Image (cartoon, rainbow, N blue to C red):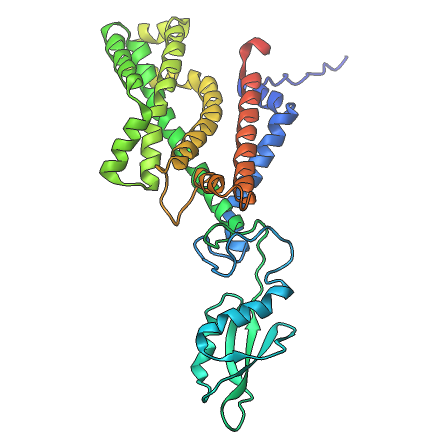
Length: 373
């Protein structure tokens, strides 16, 4: 008797599994996804590794250029020591010796040296731990010894002497956070509003869409200026202002998709079984809108980041000492002749992030498009 071999049933793939497989084959989208994750990690962890606070001011290093070697440069130490002691009413002798990470400054005065003159040296960012040594018997000649503080500014500093790398990474936190949070708010409001309007139809749909048209007619900048007047400039304001406007497009997109979905047989079957409108929206309409919503969300995030950057460029964004990419670009544009790197680095971060988000959106659109399956 011949044994009958039973083959295992072939496991099928869901639409989401098929879409994920198609997305993985899109090299541009996957490379952009990896880049975006690395960018987010840099902005999250990077400020703790730079060794500088985002609001820490170095008055001795205003608008210095990017450098892999630490500051101060060897030829700037002696002039900085002389400048620091100008107000101390002492004469700086020669030579000013630099031995390793310390400097030895010979000083003299027509009267007895006051040990408190070392404070003038400590006020300079280049030096620390200054002390008066080797004072002569008459007290008029001595030696000030101070430690040299070394700082590395990979992106240089801004117009007030703050580390540009740290501020660029902190700005990335703000811009990405506003982009993601405002997008989530726009998606939640837009999906709910559009699904209810499209499914109920009739007069309800007419009234709800006219409300959207009225909100479309309001100038966005005027709306933001009103919010600034009443609430001041802060992070929450940007989140509210952008999120309260960007849901309008989402509502129209979801409404159009809902109008086509509610004519499908499974929706009519649910209505025949007596399922309430809320249940149909929650279990059937909104889940079937996930594909277009996810695609639009990836395209909305860069749009929101651009809006925030535009508002910050106009001076309506976040307040100092906090910053965003738009604020840094605005500051760099004002000083582009004196220090072009102040504009270059934030612009590169913003541009590459926007490109990555758009590539991911294009990849999701191709992966989830049912016509391409």
